[in-house]
Length: 462
Image 1 (cartoon, rainbow, N blue to C red):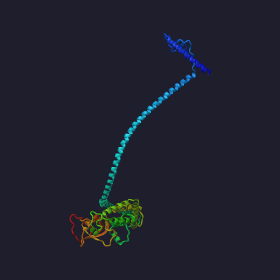
Image 2 (image 1 turned 30 degrees about the horizontal axis):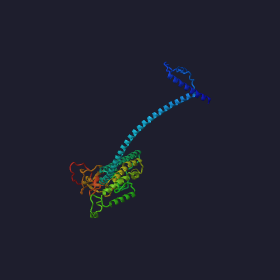
Image 3 (image 1 turned 135 degrees about the horizontal axis):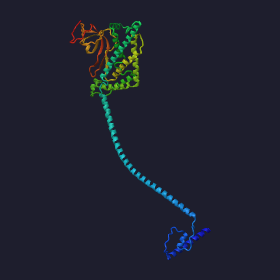
Image 4 (image 1 turned 30 degrees about the vertical axis):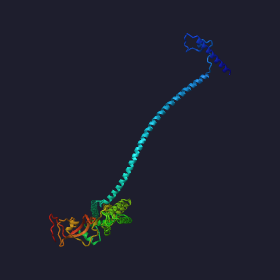
């Protein structure tokens, strides 16, 4: 407390002295000029005319330290404020950029909204057009289904498959008898007796085999066709290997389709016409088309394909067993069975499948059977009209200009075997059946065949 009061008194005394000196200086101006920038306090007191020197630093040192710290704090605060100002400026700039981006986004959003509205309108119109086109497409499909041709598989395709099958049968027979000849060559080399080509109990076949060395080959050719006709080319069958309950179900559907009223046709019939001929106005092609499409779908089913494959192998074994028993005393030859299955049975089943799937109605004629005891006589006109005839003695195909001798009744010989049945397609709407391939007969002439004539056939008689 004593120090504080003395300090206050010293300050008041210094202040009073300074005031007096100031008044004294105003009354008596100083004409001399001094540089007081580097003058100490004692010298300054003398210059200004004080009679009392200023006390040397009466303020404590702690106040100077406090002012320095506060000045440093002010500088730090100033730097912080400068950084804050710079950050605020960046925020303002970013805010301006965001506002510009927002304006652009709003513009784009409005543009997208308008385009989306246009797209929705266009999509709606497109759906409407798609619905209209779908209905028109369905109508076109219905019309196409009703107006499609009666033969989905062409006649040329069916005929080509049948000709290939005939070639395969003839080629397999040549291979088979070549193998038998090879076996006989081995027997002859080893001193064993030769094995005849066929051993049969039928007397008519024995006479046929004795009449010509080629008779066995011809007979086997006809026998293979007869087995295929009985096992594969069965007329009226819906689809090979199709279960019977499936067939009955399809037949029920077809009967129901035929019973629909009004009857479908090119023109609406009158009641009297329907009473007189109820089935004549039914568009049978529609039912045939439906059946063809249904059977085609069933034929491609894996189960049906597996059944056909199993049937083909079973049929090949059925055909193979009697041939090998008659030719080689039952000797089993796997390669012959395999070639029979691959070269004859499978192509035959493929042909039968196409015949069953097509809308046309194909059949084979005549019905193949064993050799007939009553041989049918034939004339020269029968050669070129509907059949092909092969002479058993010369293995030559007879022609309309072949030199033959006529009997009293005009015949020239007798038919022995049907080697290949003819292929025909049934006509529709009262049209006659169409002959696609002639029947091939093995014949025996009454007199030996001479050379072909260049001119008209003379009416020679025996």
